[in-house]
Length: 84
Image (cartoon, rainbow, N blue to C red):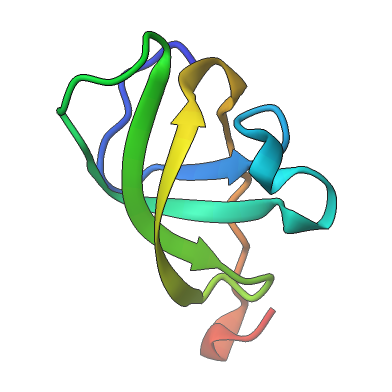
C-alpha cells in the first residue's frame, strides 16, 4: 500500500503484511490510529478494530505490519436494517 494510512481506512491484514496473520489468522481491520514512533523501515504500528463478516467491530487490536503487504478491503454492503 503506497498511500498514507489514516483513521477510518479498512484494510486486509494477512500473511503478506506479517507472518502472524497468515492463513486463517487473516483479518479485516479498521484503522483508528497510526503510530508515528520510528520503527524498522517499511513497518508500522496500527491501532484499530478487527471487523467481522457483517461489518461490525469485534476486537480492538494493535498490530505491527509491513506497509508493502497491506491492501484495501472491500467494505461490507449493508441492506436496510443493517443486515447483509
